[in-house]
Length: 318
Image 1: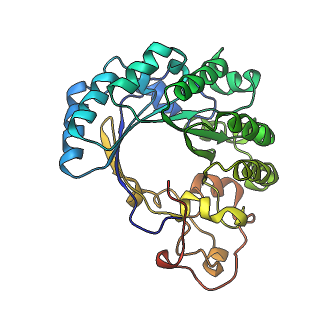
Image 2: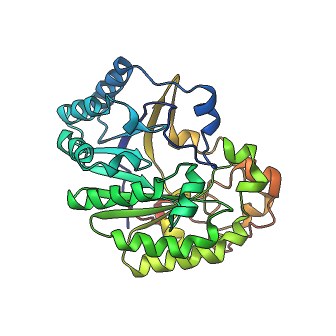
């Protein structure tokens, strides 16, 4: 369990471009509308500023960072500047190429977060709207294991795949080597998911039993589990795995904006009147407003007890 200050991190969102079109993408509207990349000169300055400000971790994200030819330059500079952890957040498709994956690792990448959302090709390729994406991700995971690189996985939960969560967990258990954590994320109701809310966003209540089975499988397999956009009243058995109860020290820098994620995390959230009676009231961010505007607060039942503060509650270390 983790009780100290979170590690200091800068996440550099390199582009709004992507080689997939995931049906649930929370920034999909930006990829369609903006479709741009940041200049290398900007990214270079971001890295230097982050190093001067004492950041421990740098993470390259997007869009999709691996489609940028200068990603390797960014990784090499991050290594030269002395970042302890150099991460890429990727859909994993480019990792199917062993030579490319090896180049990333040789340049300095020592942590990779791969998005995988389904236990089979039919569902994964539908969700990503990309033929062959499932097989590419599986090969990418194998390549990372051969290179002994720390890896993490991220799964977005939607109406299309929540019933398959236990099977997805079983798939993830096949890739335990050097896996630091598996992240299960209830879909953010923004971007494409907001535009097609009723088609894509399930209720938390209907997700719960399938999510519980998946969590049980991952925990039994001794994998480090994290839940995002899931709340204590929805799955109280796994409160120590909920990012909404933790703090973060992450600066996100993207095209034309930057945001402190800890300061920004409450901006789009809300709590119902009943939440004030919950023991987690001081810790929980509450659900997204774009969710409760549609569904209300009837699903959210207070957990009674003495109110918890940050100094007397523990969450897992990310």
